[in-house]
Image (cartoon, rainbow, N blue to C red; front, side, top):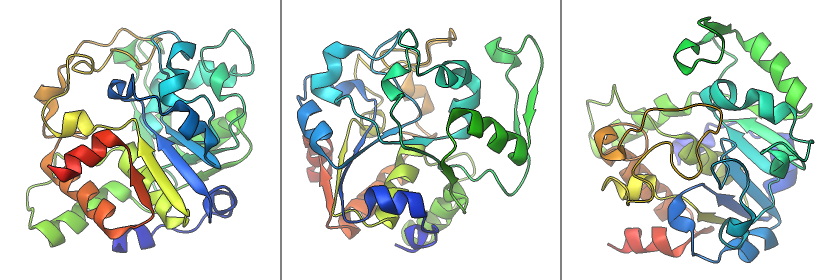
Length: 275
């Protein structure tokens, strides 16, 4: 696909992905009861998204059988990194940190392009910086990243915009101003660019594939959410035009799954594709 081919190869990702059996495991609560844990951990490289935890206050060992427990690559968005996780990520070597499960991460890759312009993120609404706005320029962002891990990469293109252009051309969508693709899709695209022998995708349900979610994942702050903040509960069904549930996102992932024969889908996604 044109979008994927525009992503520059990253030498560190190549070492971890090229020719290897890779798993991308998302945080969807629909994975509970799947028993995919052993298969996930048996892969050569295990990738996760946005520092999601499997429990409210940390990594829940009871879910290892469904989500596995290894993490080699963390694909991260900008907002998640700053707004909720920074203090805990830097302390992840401490056994008391809920992010201790990520202490052995080999690489962090930012799927948002941050090097081309200033990035502004107001955090006062989250109560984190005591009514101050945190304004981050690319060099400051990279400096803080080095506090987390010396080895990290940043995507070279704006995948959200590139995906919009792709969908406008392929599917005839004209009004996409309010829609964006999520970090999970960007991670899939980045992994495929680095030629895995197999990419197993699990723990992702895209808001129950546009239907609004199940009782377990109807709210943004349930299950695997940020532990440091009290977010207002928002039903996914009210967000149908945004990241996880919009129609063009579903058409885009269908197109990706169709074009790459090295993708292996879990039963939940396979059943959706078969509908």
